[in-house]
Image 1 (cartoon, one colour):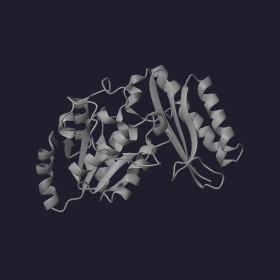
Image 2: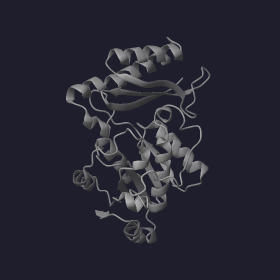
Image 3: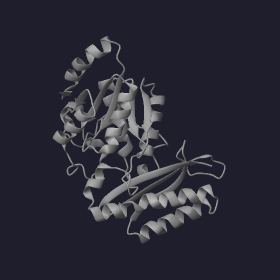
Amino acid sequence: MMIVNTIAELQDALYKHRQAGSTIGFVPTMGNLHQGHLSLVDKAKELSDVVIVSLFVNPTQFGPNEDFDSYPRTFDADCQKLQNHDADIIFAPSVEEVYPGYPQNKAQPNLTKVHVAELGKDHCGASRPGHFDGVTTIVTKLFNMVRPDIAVFGQKDFQQLAVIRRMVQDLNIPVTIIGAPILREPNGLAMSSRNGYLSQEQKDQAAGIYRVLSWAKEQLNTHKQSFDEVEQSAVKQLEEQGFRVDYFNIANADTLQVAETSDKNIVILAAAFLGKVRLIDNVTLTL
């Protein structure tokens, strides 16, 4: 396994693989890896000859009051895990390498941004203004640096996956986007880097989000309640369990717009705070 820190080193490392006609798989991450991330690496290994994993905490997708400075950085442990899962190249650039002039110019007022209309405006986009612009900008930059054939993203960030798929389609970026299933703890809690902020007691409590999502899915499958009734009841259940609910939305899985009774492909999206930790999760269903 090779570790590179600059774009030039990355291109040199990939040159021989491109010359050999190898397919290149890419898994972009912010590090602090858990089994969910590693399942993405495993999927990339199945579908490509060479796998690159980026470890880069992207400052432009964090809001001013979010946890960029305190976000866990576990580089050595991440490298060991990736070696155990047969990653070929780790790309760990500095912020300066990715955003020339940063951090001297933290505001980045003239930074070119990639904006995907509509899909990023609701749900997480409504409560985290600018977040998805940060995501799409960094993913575009990484795609330009790595030039992969495929890229694997987790379905836990359902809205992010939809936004990236739309971006790739709209900008004719020659990358196939693969969505990998959510990995969960035995109690149902979706694996997330931010789970590291939780105590074991809080992790047990946090699993309540998935239980409520599963309850909502059952209600829709059996047509026991309307969409609005399910959303309102779900919010009440989460609040009674100690969550501060950001949103609980039933949406069209393709457009991410508010679901209508005629829609067949449905996603139920939830975000809620447990203490200071913001957790997201989702389930899908076909009606």
